[in-house]
Amino acid sequence: MTKAIRVHIPGGPDSMLWEDVPTPEPGPGEALVRHAAVGLNYIDVYFRTGLYKAPSLPMTIGMEGAGTVLAIGSGVTDVAVGDRVAYAGALGAYATERVLGADKLVKIPEGVDFTTAAAMMLQGMTAQYLLRRTYQVKAGDPIVVHAAAGGVGLILCQWAKHIGATVIGVVSTAEKAALAKAHGAAHAVVGYGDLVAAVKRITGGAMVPVVYDSIGKDTFNTSMDCLAPLGLMCCYGAASGPIPPIDISILGAKGSLFLTRPSLATYTVKRSDLVATAGELFDVVKSGAVKINVNQTFALKDAAAAHIALESRKTTGSTVLIP
Ligand code: NDP
Image (cartoon, rainbow, N blue to C red; front, side, top):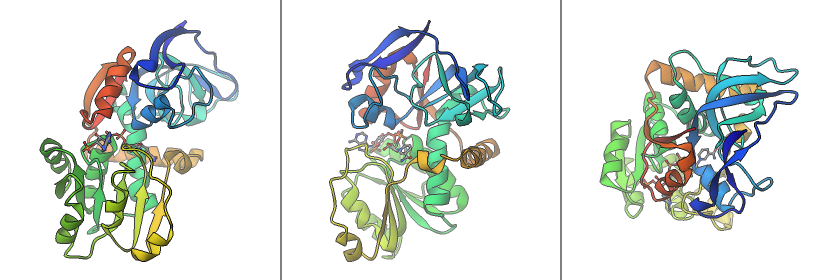
């Protein structure tokens, strides 16, 4: 037997139960991994509450982990028993041991520990595709980054600064503003009330070519008003709730804007894209250009406390659950 967090009925943090489950066996193309660390991500909240539909119930939530390969099924060539591996984007991570498609796994390079690997795969690969593929940020670009002191946020700030961009971070408190600035944000705006005016001032009225908005409902309109003509509204999350349906003529009225709702799954569905994305992430982390801040750790069995902290905006940087 092994242990896992299971949700029988989607709902609040107390819907997550720490239960005995049979140790799974890897089938063809699969690997059994013993987790050393599991990453906490906002998408775990969306699955727990039912905003994202469970494939079946009971469900073990969690998309990201790092650990050691214990066994492999037939036909697996990407990893071997004993490899140190990490992954993002495979539901079922809140478990001591789990089976997943071996093609989702990447080997953890030397010098990167399990906790750091578990913290960075999902948030760091997201930062990679957002900055390098959804929009190709260039040196000198001013960009707006919401939740700049959060998990994805602190990585975006550091990586964008490394590229040479001017990050205008948006946060909810003065402490978070200081943290975002210490991680590469040139400016940190507290709250959304003055954001448009601040962006106007900082850019001399030109506004920004891209807004990375992970907040959703509460910030959509404000973010649109921060964009320069032909700018890209990148809605990659909905921490405040989903954006209601919009009339697309607003894109024309505000300057022939582009709108996207990207997802890491699409950007890493091909094994070659996954390996390249993870490889670039490992490179910036190993070079020291991007530091992964694991600012909170919880025992995996205490996942409810971790969710409460994340949802009440008490966390900064990344959070890891230890089995
Ligand atoms: P964060 O660490 O960024 O935590 C969420 C932050 O959102 C909070 O700390 C808070 O920062 C801000 N926030 C604003 N309004 C609310 C609200 N009403 N309730 C809660 N938080 C709020 O989480 P992650 O780094 O894990 O994820 C960041 C976002 O990125 C999420 O929206 C997630 O869904 C998205 N994401 C999307 C991916 C994709 O491929 N599309 C992949 C990975 C993440 P503050 O207090 O400063 O406002």
